[in-house]
Length: 142
Image (cartoon, rainbow, N blue to C red):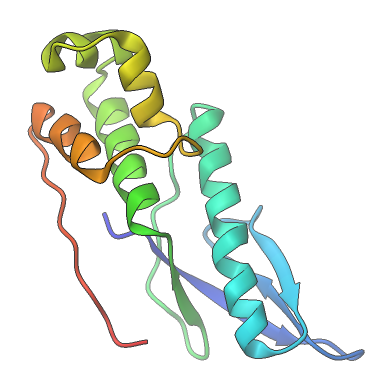
């Protein structure tokens, strides 16, 4: 899954823009101008998606951009962690089971799955491979 979500920027009467993500309703923010609103949108998206994982909920699947919507991507490390979290949920693999597959302790996998812990992306990639998944990095026009 690609962790790039459409958002709606709405000009506010008093100035600035509010931001809403149709697929991630908890990700709300605003900014003084369009550029700042989009910058804040990434932060709001990161917090909201991290909360889904922390609360053991499914990560929302992003829809295609609608007319006038902007696309906002999560940072690569978080995208990798969300992919790992999602693969584990789909396959029904626990952190203890993944740790055994990796030959590591359960605390190691807990850190890999924690969206707020700074892990090495190669470690997350190895965990994905242990689940029969691979990490793909791409780029897009800004």
